[in-house]
Amino acid sequence: MKAVLNSLRRFSLTGLAVLFALWAGYKLWDYYFDAPWTRDGHVRADVVPVAADVSGFVAEVLVRDNQQVRIGDVLFRIDRARYEIALRQAEAVQVGKRAQLDNANADLKRYSALTPGVVVSSQRMDQVVATQGSAQAAYDQAVADVALAKLNLERSEVRAAVNGIVTNMELRPGTYLTPGKGVMALLDTDTLHIQGYFEETKLQRIHIGDPVAVLLMGSSEVLQGKVESVAAGIEDRDRSSGSNLLANVNPTFNWVRLAQRVPVRIALDRAQRNELVAGATATVEVMGSGKAGDGRQTSKLAAAGV
Image (cartoon, rainbow, N blue to C red; front, side, top):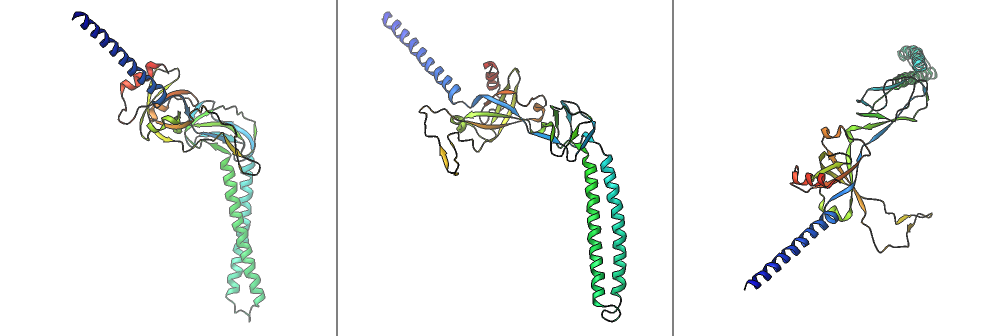
Protein backbone atom coordinates (compact mmCIF):
# COMPACT_ATOMS: atom_id res chain seq x y z
CA MET A 1 0.00 0.00 0.00
CA LYS A 2 2.82 2.32 0.90
CA ALA A 3 4.48 1.70 -2.46
CA VAL A 4 1.21 2.54 -4.24
CA LEU A 5 0.90 5.82 -2.33
CA ASN A 6 4.47 6.74 -3.19
CA SER A 7 3.80 6.00 -6.84
CA LEU A 8 0.63 8.12 -6.79
CA ARG A 9 2.54 10.91 -5.10
CA ARG A 10 5.26 10.81 -7.75
CA PHE A 11 2.71 10.72 -10.57
CA SER A 12 0.83 13.62 -8.97
CA LEU A 13 3.97 15.73 -8.64
CA THR A 14 4.95 14.90 -12.21
CA GLY A 15 1.47 15.76 -13.43
CA LEU A 16 1.50 19.07 -11.56
CA ALA A 17 4.92 19.90 -12.96
CA VAL A 18 3.72 19.13 -16.50
CA LEU A 19 0.58 21.23 -16.01
CA PHE A 20 2.62 24.10 -14.63
CA ALA A 21 5.03 23.86 -17.56
CA LEU A 22 2.14 23.88 -20.01
CA TRP A 23 0.55 26.87 -18.25
CA ALA A 24 3.87 28.73 -18.18
CA GLY A 25 4.47 27.93 -21.85
CA TYR A 26 1.02 29.20 -22.76
CA LYS A 27 1.58 32.42 -20.82
CA LEU A 28 4.96 32.97 -22.45
CA TRP A 29 3.50 32.29 -25.88
CA ASP A 30 0.63 34.67 -25.22
CA TYR A 31 2.95 37.39 -23.90
CA TYR A 32 5.51 37.27 -26.70
CA PHE A 33 3.27 36.43 -29.65
CA ASP A 34 -0.29 37.60 -28.87
CA ALA A 35 -0.14 40.17 -26.05
CA PRO A 36 -0.37 43.76 -27.37
CA TRP A 37 3.11 45.03 -26.59
CA THR A 38 6.07 46.00 -28.72
CA ARG A 39 9.64 47.17 -28.37
CA ASP A 40 9.23 49.07 -31.63
CA GLY A 41 7.96 52.36 -30.24
CA HIS A 42 9.20 55.89 -30.75
CA VAL A 43 8.56 59.36 -29.41
CA ARG A 44 7.07 61.49 -32.19
CA ALA A 45 6.14 65.16 -32.58
CA ASP A 46 5.16 67.56 -35.34
CA VAL A 47 8.05 69.68 -36.62
CA VAL A 48 7.46 73.14 -38.10
CA PRO A 49 10.17 74.31 -40.53
CA VAL A 50 10.75 77.99 -39.76
CA ALA A 51 11.24 80.14 -42.85
CA ALA A 52 11.13 83.83 -43.67
CA ASP A 53 8.20 85.23 -45.63
CA VAL A 54 10.24 88.16 -46.99
CA SER A 55 13.81 88.37 -48.24
CA GLY A 56 16.67 90.28 -46.69
CA PHE A 57 19.64 90.13 -44.34
CA VAL A 58 19.13 88.79 -40.83
CA ALA A 59 19.52 91.75 -38.48
CA GLU A 60 18.99 90.02 -35.14
CA VAL A 61 18.58 86.47 -33.80
CA LEU A 62 16.67 86.35 -30.52
CA VAL A 63 16.76 82.61 -29.76
CA ARG A 64 19.44 79.99 -29.26
CA ASP A 65 19.56 76.33 -30.12
CA ASN A 66 17.23 74.09 -28.04
CA GLN A 67 15.41 77.06 -26.49
CA GLN A 68 11.78 76.77 -25.37
CA VAL A 69 9.50 79.31 -27.08
CA ARG A 70 5.82 80.20 -26.97
CA ILE A 71 3.39 81.10 -29.75
CA GLY A 72 4.11 84.62 -30.96
CA ASP A 73 7.68 84.87 -29.62
CA VAL A 74 10.03 86.64 -32.06
CA LEU A 75 12.66 84.21 -33.31
CA PHE A 76 14.67 86.56 -35.55
CA ARG A 77 14.36 89.84 -37.42
CA ILE A 78 15.18 90.70 -41.00
CA ASP A 79 16.58 94.14 -41.82
CA ARG A 80 13.55 96.46 -41.84
CA ALA A 81 14.96 99.56 -43.60
CA ARG A 82 13.87 98.55 -47.12
CA TYR A 83 10.35 97.65 -45.94
CA GLU A 84 9.95 100.85 -43.92
CA ILE A 85 10.85 102.86 -47.03
CA ALA A 86 8.41 100.82 -49.13
CA LEU A 87 5.66 101.54 -46.60
CA ARG A 88 6.30 105.29 -46.70
CA GLN A 89 6.25 105.21 -50.51
CA ALA A 90 2.95 103.33 -50.53
CA GLU A 91 1.44 105.78 -48.03
CA ALA A 92 2.57 108.75 -50.15
CA VAL A 93 1.01 107.23 -53.25
CA GLN A 94 -2.17 106.61 -51.29
CA VAL A 95 -2.36 110.28 -50.31
CA GLY A 96 -1.99 111.33 -53.97
CA LYS A 97 -4.64 108.86 -55.12
CA ARG A 98 -6.95 110.07 -52.37
CA ALA A 99 -6.62 113.66 -53.62
CA GLN A 100 -7.39 112.55 -57.18
CA LEU A 101 -10.42 110.63 -55.96
CA ASP A 102 -11.71 113.61 -53.98
CA ASN A 103 -11.37 115.84 -57.07
CA ALA A 104 -13.15 113.26 -59.26
CA ASN A 105 -15.95 112.91 -56.69
CA ALA A 106 -16.37 116.70 -56.60
CA ASP A 107 -16.55 116.89 -60.41
CA LEU A 108 -19.09 114.09 -60.49
CA LYS A 109 -21.21 115.85 -57.88
CA ARG A 110 -21.13 119.16 -59.78
CA TYR A 111 -21.94 117.63 -63.16
CA SER A 112 -24.67 115.45 -61.68
CA ALA A 113 -26.45 118.60 -60.49
CA LEU A 114 -26.65 119.96 -64.07
CA THR A 115 -29.35 119.02 -66.53
CA PRO A 116 -28.07 116.18 -68.76
CA GLY A 117 -28.21 116.93 -72.50
CA VAL A 118 -28.89 120.64 -71.96
CA VAL A 119 -26.20 122.22 -69.75
CA VAL A 120 -23.80 119.29 -70.03
CA SER A 121 -23.51 116.81 -72.86
CA SER A 122 -23.99 113.10 -72.34
CA GLN A 123 -20.46 112.47 -73.63
CA ARG A 124 -18.95 114.81 -71.04
CA MET A 125 -21.03 113.21 -68.31
CA ASP A 126 -19.79 109.78 -69.33
CA GLN A 127 -16.21 111.04 -69.18
CA VAL A 128 -16.72 112.42 -65.66
CA VAL A 129 -18.21 109.13 -64.48
CA ALA A 130 -15.34 107.16 -66.04
CA THR A 131 -12.76 109.47 -64.47
CA GLN A 132 -14.35 109.02 -61.05
CA GLY A 133 -14.39 105.24 -61.48
CA SER A 134 -10.72 105.18 -62.50
CA ALA A 135 -9.81 107.39 -59.54
CA GLN A 136 -11.71 105.09 -57.17
CA ALA A 137 -9.95 102.00 -58.56
CA ALA A 138 -6.54 103.70 -58.31
CA TYR A 139 -7.22 104.65 -54.69
CA ASP A 140 -8.34 101.12 -53.83
CA GLN A 141 -5.11 99.80 -55.36
CA ALA A 142 -3.11 102.28 -53.29
CA VAL A 143 -4.90 101.13 -50.11
CA ALA A 144 -4.04 97.51 -50.96
CA ASP A 145 -0.39 98.47 -51.61
CA VAL A 146 -0.19 100.11 -48.19
CA ALA A 147 -1.67 97.02 -46.56
CA LEU A 148 0.87 94.83 -48.38
CA ALA A 149 3.74 97.10 -47.35
CA LYS A 150 2.60 96.93 -43.72
CA LEU A 151 2.34 93.15 -43.95
CA ASN A 152 5.86 92.85 -45.39
CA LEU A 153 7.18 95.09 -42.61
CA GLU A 154 5.38 92.99 -40.02
CA ARG A 155 6.65 89.74 -41.57
CA SER A 156 10.23 90.99 -41.25
CA GLU A 157 9.86 89.71 -37.69
CA VAL A 158 9.60 85.93 -37.80
CA ARG A 159 7.57 84.59 -34.87
CA ALA A 160 6.95 81.13 -33.46
CA ALA A 161 3.79 79.58 -34.90
CA VAL A 162 3.48 76.94 -32.12
CA ASN A 163 4.65 76.25 -28.61
CA GLY A 164 7.84 74.29 -28.86
CA ILE A 165 11.60 74.03 -28.84
CA VAL A 166 13.90 75.54 -31.45
CA THR A 167 16.39 72.90 -32.56
CA ASN A 168 19.10 72.45 -35.18
CA MET A 169 19.45 76.23 -35.26
CA GLU A 170 22.57 77.62 -36.94
CA LEU A 171 21.19 80.99 -38.09
CA ARG A 172 23.48 83.97 -37.58
CA PRO A 173 23.06 87.74 -38.13
CA GLY A 174 24.10 88.81 -41.61
CA THR A 175 22.73 85.74 -43.35
CA TYR A 176 20.69 86.58 -46.43
CA LEU A 177 17.36 84.78 -46.49
CA THR A 178 14.95 84.12 -49.33
CA PRO A 179 11.21 83.55 -48.82
CA GLY A 180 10.15 80.00 -48.04
CA LYS A 181 13.60 78.56 -47.31
CA GLY A 182 13.68 76.82 -43.91
CA VAL A 183 16.44 77.98 -41.57
CA MET A 184 15.59 76.14 -38.34
CA ALA A 185 13.22 73.50 -36.96
CA LEU A 186 10.57 74.22 -34.34
CA LEU A 187 9.44 71.06 -32.57
CA ASP A 188 5.82 71.37 -31.44
CA THR A 189 5.86 70.17 -27.83
CA ASP A 190 2.05 70.16 -27.68
CA THR A 191 2.03 67.26 -30.16
CA LEU A 192 4.58 65.01 -28.41
CA HIS A 193 3.24 61.46 -28.35
CA ILE A 194 4.30 57.84 -28.57
CA GLN A 195 4.00 55.90 -31.80
CA GLY A 196 3.94 52.14 -31.27
CA TYR A 197 4.28 49.79 -34.23
CA PHE A 198 2.24 46.68 -33.42
CA GLU A 199 2.00 43.49 -35.42
CA GLU A 200 -1.31 43.14 -37.23
CA THR A 201 -2.03 39.92 -35.30
CA LYS A 202 -2.26 41.97 -32.09
CA LEU A 203 -4.59 44.72 -33.30
CA GLN A 204 -7.75 42.85 -32.28
CA ARG A 205 -6.71 43.30 -28.64
CA ILE A 206 -6.11 47.06 -28.99
CA HIS A 207 -9.01 49.49 -28.60
CA ILE A 208 -9.33 53.27 -28.55
CA GLY A 209 -8.98 54.52 -24.97
CA ASP A 210 -7.15 51.45 -23.63
CA PRO A 211 -4.56 52.34 -20.96
CA VAL A 212 -0.95 51.99 -22.03
CA ALA A 213 2.37 51.62 -20.19
CA VAL A 214 5.40 53.18 -21.89
CA LEU A 215 9.02 52.55 -20.91
CA LEU A 216 11.65 54.71 -22.60
CA MET A 217 15.00 53.15 -23.38
CA GLY A 218 17.51 54.05 -20.68
CA SER A 219 14.78 55.04 -18.20
CA SER A 220 13.26 53.13 -15.31
CA GLU A 221 10.15 55.31 -15.09
CA VAL A 222 7.01 53.83 -16.63
CA LEU A 223 4.83 56.47 -18.28
CA GLN A 224 1.06 56.14 -18.45
CA GLY A 225 -0.94 56.89 -21.57
CA LYS A 226 -3.89 55.73 -23.61
CA VAL A 227 -4.55 54.57 -27.14
CA GLU A 228 -5.57 57.62 -29.18
CA SER A 229 -5.90 56.11 -32.65
CA VAL A 230 -4.85 53.28 -34.95
CA ALA A 231 -3.51 53.97 -38.44
CA ALA A 232 -6.10 53.45 -41.16
CA GLY A 233 -3.60 51.97 -43.60
CA ILE A 234 0.03 51.17 -44.39
CA GLU A 235 2.03 50.91 -47.60
CA ASP A 236 1.62 47.80 -49.75
CA ARG A 237 5.21 46.93 -50.65
CA ASP A 238 4.15 44.21 -53.09
CA ARG A 239 2.32 46.66 -55.33
CA SER A 240 3.21 49.83 -57.18
CA SER A 241 2.01 51.79 -60.20
CA GLY A 242 3.47 50.96 -63.59
CA SER A 243 4.34 53.40 -66.35
CA ASN A 244 0.80 53.06 -67.75
CA LEU A 245 -0.69 53.60 -64.26
CA LEU A 246 -1.81 49.97 -64.01
CA ALA A 247 -1.10 47.97 -60.87
CA ASN A 248 2.40 46.49 -60.84
CA VAL A 249 2.17 43.47 -58.51
CA ASN A 250 5.28 41.61 -57.36
CA PRO A 251 5.14 38.15 -59.06
CA THR A 252 7.02 36.45 -56.22
CA PHE A 253 5.32 35.32 -53.04
CA ASN A 254 6.98 34.37 -49.78
CA TRP A 255 5.36 31.34 -48.17
CA VAL A 256 6.52 32.52 -44.76
CA ARG A 257 4.62 35.74 -44.30
CA LEU A 258 5.72 38.12 -41.57
CA ALA A 259 3.05 40.10 -39.77
CA GLN A 260 2.85 43.71 -40.91
CA ARG A 261 3.42 46.44 -38.32
CA VAL A 262 0.69 49.03 -37.95
CA PRO A 263 1.26 52.41 -36.23
CA VAL A 264 -0.76 53.03 -33.07
CA ARG A 265 -0.75 56.56 -31.63
CA ILE A 266 -0.41 56.81 -27.84
CA ALA A 267 -1.39 60.02 -26.05
CA LEU A 268 0.43 61.03 -22.86
CA ASP A 269 -0.50 63.51 -20.15
CA ARG A 270 0.94 66.99 -20.64
CA ALA A 271 3.06 66.68 -17.49
CA GLN A 272 4.70 63.52 -18.85
CA ARG A 273 5.64 65.17 -22.16
CA ASN A 274 8.03 67.71 -20.66
CA GLU A 275 11.17 65.57 -20.71
CA LEU A 276 10.49 63.58 -23.88
CA VAL A 277 12.94 63.68 -26.76
CA ALA A 278 11.44 63.20 -30.21
CA GLY A 279 12.88 60.13 -31.89
CA ALA A 280 13.68 58.28 -28.66
CA THR A 281 12.96 54.54 -28.49
CA ALA A 282 10.21 53.17 -26.27
CA THR A 283 8.59 49.90 -25.32
CA VAL A 284 4.79 50.09 -25.41
CA GLU A 285 2.33 47.75 -23.71
CA VAL A 286 -1.44 48.04 -24.08
CA MET A 287 -2.93 46.79 -20.83
CA GLY A 288 -6.57 46.52 -21.85
CA SER A 289 -9.69 48.19 -20.53
CA GLY A 290 -9.98 48.62 -16.79
CA LYS A 291 -6.28 48.11 -16.09
CA ALA A 292 -5.15 51.71 -15.91
CA GLY A 293 -2.63 52.21 -13.17
CA ASP A 294 -2.32 48.48 -12.57
CA GLY A 295 0.95 48.19 -10.66
CA ARG A 296 1.40 44.55 -11.64
CA GLN A 297 1.29 45.43 -15.33
CA THR A 298 3.73 48.33 -15.12
CA SER A 299 6.13 46.50 -12.84
CA LYS A 300 6.14 43.57 -15.27
CA LEU A 301 7.16 45.90 -18.07
CA ALA A 302 9.90 47.54 -16.03
CA ALA A 303 11.17 44.26 -14.62
CA ALA A 304 11.39 42.79 -18.12
CA GLY A 305 13.98 45.43 -18.96
CA VAL A 306 12.43 46.05 -22.37
